[in-house]
Image (cartoon, rainbow, N blue to C red; front, side, top):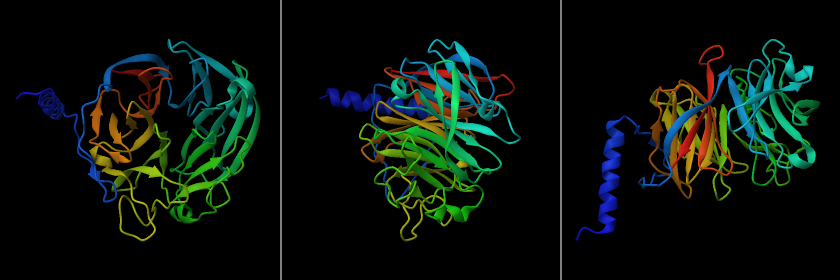
Length: 360
């Protein structure tokens, strides 16, 4: 009998064949501690994309204000803009320590306080040659003032990390690269090659495994952070020559660098849940969770990955918009809607865009 279940199986096989024919399915490598589960059809996947805002230069981080507008910073110009969901934007006036470039300074991650209505605080990862820092500012809706350095002494280099986000526990998480010094990733008391977890005052969050800011270690160049609907923390990581990674992050765990790039059998190391070669659409950057899946922006791969989750297992990744919009830097879920915002990266002077993806 041709049942509803059999019709669903047939529809799924047809959809999978169509995706494969269109070049959407790109196989990745499952690691030994996270065997992939079969993909299942889901209702909400990317269905449409359009430009929300254009004329940007290296937009790097995106964070939402309670009214539904977003703060977006430009990496090299060190400018911060407030962007309405219509795409209209206004530049936030900033004091000189943020607004004036100083030869190698960059603005990377940005995070609005979860209590912004009460404290009006905005946090920024400020990369600089003399050492990167996490700073706090006060935003009154038009001006950024009250610059205060919370964390300093993070070594800068080609591997900066730089993503900051507030977790569901109310604490601020930050990714730091190894600063081109791989041995620092294994030093539990170095700030480099880590995921940090802190209070809004920049102090170690209660329950951190080593009594300092370090939450996890052994990272090379960690990029995206996202929490699933069960509060589990996921992270994307740029590898060196062989593998990029998707990690399920737990406190106190060692994620292997520099002894391991991708999965390995070294004692005490935590293997990635997924790994893929840079040449196969890699160099992951920002990441968001929405409707049962992780969405990963790829730089070199120039695509948006959708990776379905079933608990702590990953399904078959599917690539969207391959080479359609250039390098993709950040991806965030639009609050209260089944939609994403994505920023492009290095498209050219005044050529970057903020894109909106509908999920449906």
